[in-house]
Length: 148
Length: 148
Length: 148
Length: 148
Image 1 (cartoon, chains in turn red, orange, purple, yellow):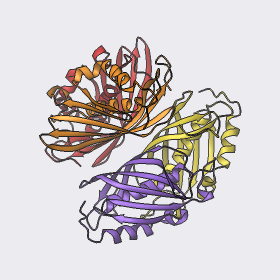
Image 2 (cartoon, one colour; image 1 turned 90 degrees about the vertical axis):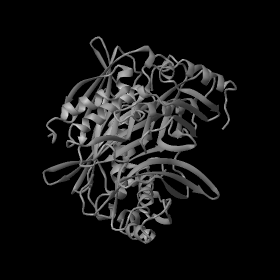
Image 3 (tube, chains in turn red, orange, green, blue; image 1 turned 180 degrees about the horizontal axis):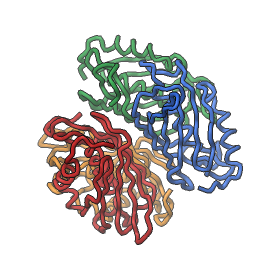
Image 4 (tube, chains in turn purple, blue, red, orange; image 1 turned 180 degrees about the vertical axis):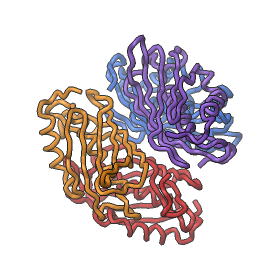
């Protein structure tokens, strides 16, 4: 996939740094390539649900953010990015030392881009798929522009 | 809808209190009725995405948690609750002073329960629908039980 | 909801009549109002899955078509309509004499419209909800225009 | 993936043959392997929507059927299969001579199995991805058993 914005990685890193939520939970942008973004999140007890697993909302947070930026790598300079919708299947308890969200663009469009993200739980050498997302992301012409 | 567990509200409140994530973000359980649960979340700057709106992952977190507990109100005593999958449409920027997630059971089953949640942004007297979720929730017989 | 195209009902009926698939399965447009469309389908043995229930694909067909046209009632004259994505929860076996798909717009936008459809099975006086859909529909400026 | 039913392919073929809907639209079961099923459908004018493309409901029909049977290949003998829910992203106009739906199991469980299906439009040597589905399929112990 060919990015139209030569500075796509810088734009993604800048926008990610502006997401206060990423700081709160300790998520890091670990890979930015055309149509492909990865986010890493160490396990923390304060991010869990009632059984001590990573909350489905946090699994979704790193999946959604990775999807949005994977789409954004392919968008023209000067545009913004919005999540239109996503669907998540939670496959196994989100138990691990670290979580990796890996998003890849399936179809890039002028207005809408469809992205898939897999979230893995990493423990030592072991890697287990815990969730998978299918998302629709929208390119907006100006960040001030109203929603779809 | 008729709860089979007379202590359904106590069970929901106990489980909610065990969700470390709810404490982290400042979410509160504001209503627990049979098949109907509401969660309230005040806006906080550290829960936002790059444009200062509530992060879609947090919108999802309070929608998913409300869906899970709305289903749980109708489950027998001694069971546990798991999110199988959900789909969220993000309708408008999540801008407001407070956010309200309201979940209602559409179809309760022995194993699977389907729930819908609407998330509203509240500002003064104004109330705007910002997202809607359709979720599948599973009843598990023992909390130790493996995933689906 | 206020239609911008005074001839919205005529446009929906004309487009519906061009859907060869609706003829094949015997579906009828039974209501067209601003933001609200209903489709009726009599049960037929050749529309079933392996247990004799209406096939989930046919349940989806009438839900998707109703969603698309519910969105279309609110679009400007001279535009076209496309389904971007949908999610369906199948709640009960689709057993009945007739099926009714009722779609209502949740949020109308310039480009994207979010619609919900419920599909009911009707048998005598009884009416049972068998499926529910949450869909994203797109307005295209010219029918010849490429996809999103 | 290891099938527990040595006659999995025979069971899938038998059930497929009982789907009246597959006969109506002319769909064929073109591959049955453990956790992997393909269905082929030649284009027909009477399966189209208003612009002459394959109707999204038919795209969904072959995706859902492939997902259900991909899950079924891994289920024990004497069980039945039901679609719980699915989400479809429609990526490009469904224009082609033949359509191929390819479903692969992502996670097989005792009760729930998560499956992904891609639908391709084939024209001469060209193959284009037109839709992708993420589905939850349920194993039922007896075919007579009520829904989830």
